[in-house]
Length: 373
Length: 180
Image (tube, rainbow over the protein chains, first blue to last red):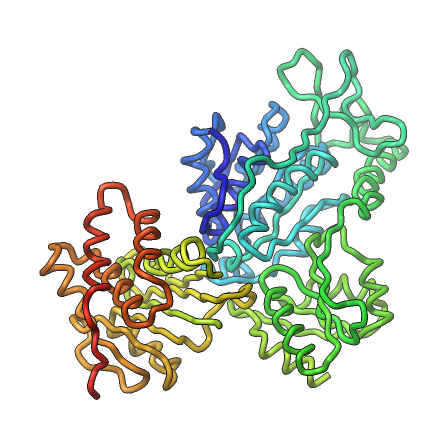
């Protein structure tokens, strides 16, 4: 028995849970929190059915730590949470980055700060996804805007985490998490698992020539595997006072993502070719953005849309190109987070239409904003 | 064509379930596009409950309801809260066993669903399904067969017969617009 297949009318959180099963996830640890709870609730039932393990931990710190442990025991693993829990997970995000542990963290975002608006949408955690833990590291963050993508991008999140041995964040929001839509779930999905290091190897943190991502090893297969958050050498043993080792390791943790950005990044574009104004958005507001683009075009305004499917690494080059050609308008459900990234790459003034309080931009208000530019 | 349907009542009446069944009927069995969303307070039972379905013959981008075309309402509190969103062309289908006065706006159809559920089926829990049947009979957005299949997909095992009887109660009556 495996993941659900066929044409279904599903909730986003359940599509995410099924995507995890399809990707080969067989361990889920979590602590329930609105609006992510259905992911855990569904997997509590489904994990035992597919030979996996579900465990409700005492909190989110324990949850993310458990999935790191599970991955080193050889199981693909995921947790799901929302803002307050995401904050608690941050130390271990850095640990997972440092130990190059492939894990998937789902954040179904709600209004913050603090406990904020539990039942309402926001995208106020997106910079935390990138910068929430201490020290230098890179992660990958994805942003779904439909129930179908809650399935597809969960699969993608696992594959990217395994390919780059890195934590991947699925940055959903209450709308896509709780919305129900028709989805088509394929019988088979393409999956990738981090290859194991060669027989007899002691170097589970040394990439092959030409690669930045080492093969990995797991516990219980007869290898001496040492995993530490301390700066370590290529065997995984602590080497905390050597500037050369630290520099080489941490640069590689960043480079393996940033130098592969071209392979990782996915965006969706509509009518950008001749656009004079480009709406830049992600998640649920991108649906309103596209509706607005269609309406603006019908009214003779050359509008286009750039949707960030990958939030991090950030598609800097494409944003710069578009900024040279068109006015950019950023739409997001926070007071200016991805805006900073867009401004940094655009190197010019960027227009901004934020929305907080728990409501989604309507296409009409987007149209009105663009017409006033 | 874009039809916006809002269901509202109090927690425990199956407001969200009604939205799911309608969305499933439209998108899986009627060949249309549908998006269902919901909003709720922190309470598990009682409190206001709202569920919305957008149905269209083309891709649905903006998933929320702003100006409902159909408002299915099952509590006086919900009627009060959302009557301001009801425009002249909106069809209001209200549980007249719980809401005594017809709304002053929209085209109002009284359906005594809770009373019928109790009297005919002995279970008030299926009043929401009677309302769905009435919605199909009054608006024709989805047909009875699509709803029937969606009901069977959605309701718990062992309650299929009860729910189908409730659906037919709603489908087979001739509902008349209220005289204001």
